[in-house]
Length: 187
Image (cartoon, rainbow, N blue to C red; front, side, top):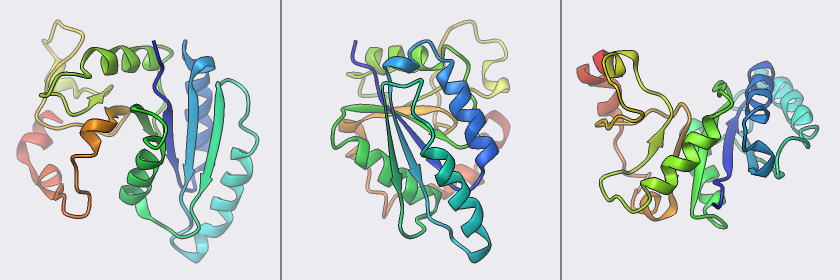
């Protein structure tokens, strides 16, 4: 099985990022997985030092993965466009990917679950993305390994190039997600 690369979007939280990378290294498939790290540029003067320190640390991340690629934004993109840039960059060479942010600590089977799900659902037109997060209310009495939901969480997720390319991020309105009472109740 071809393994999905991981795209990790970071900003200025070095301790969070260290924990994410250390947890990811403990995954059963990490040694065979490419890691792409996307470091956003500071959005304000007071973040310059912490972004610089984080970038210095990132250059030490070498072991535990098949390959490590680091991209440093020259100007601040914000989380939305940092993520879009990360995914588009990965899709230049891959057909699917797994995404993480700088505060998502995974368990050791995360990559295994995500790769299995990405392979299993790749041809299912009803599935736009895979996420490893499921809200406790949505799964409280659920007896299966997966759950289908109306929306997704970006807390450990993956998708396919063919499905990602159908989204226009400049006109995509996601404001409903934060305002939805259903989201507030079910997650």
